[in-house]
Length: 291
Image (cartoon, rainbow, N blue to C red; front, side, top):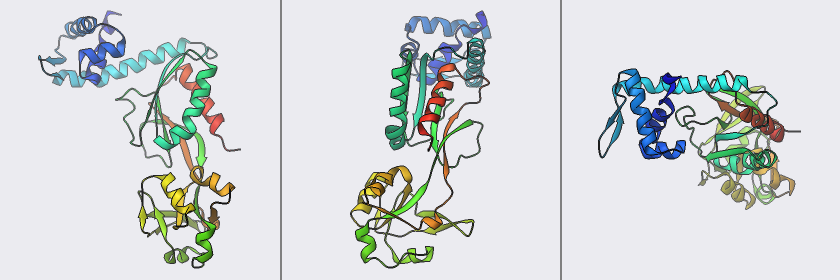
């Protein structure tokens, strides 16, 4: 097992960019991290890090070895997971990333419940609307919404989301007729990051280039604008379902609503998922499932 000595320390230094950061991450001393990395370099016969008083960087050999070292970590994790009983109580740290709004409103309440059931679980959640590199940043899985791009990641479908077009009754009372997609040309549309609205017409997906006088990258701000009668909005159901229930908004053009999209957990390709991750994915799937 001497060949494994220093691999965790080297990967942590490479990711953190410092021996101090690596020591904090591994809950050990800087001296211990330095000793183990030097031992690894001696075993390999190559210098992996350039060390100066001001800067730490990977050598050419260090860059080559880093991706393989991360793979070795996953292989060892998988071997360890394979030995565990499948009914073992979940324990340990789970690192996750999710979109900000959906993570706040839907994922974190379920994770908090999961942690209440399993007191030995620790969770490190990063809410971020950017798609982060799961392997590079050490995430166990990510929550992603909509159609997935082709990738080497594995995916677990947790639930579906449905996109709806809504407006306030006060807006519809004084607005032009709205029976067809062509009628949208006569209406104010409240725009998010994209101006392209998706529909299905006669069994085929079609797009409409929406126009309006308000653009905002916040779904909640668009919901508020719609409730105040400023125009039509197209958003996933979880933004507007409460307003629809209270009659603050009315769904329109429902005969043209697009196909539902997936809400996914994506994770690096590993043969064995740790018990804690597998159980949390099951818990999320049950909690998010649409009745």
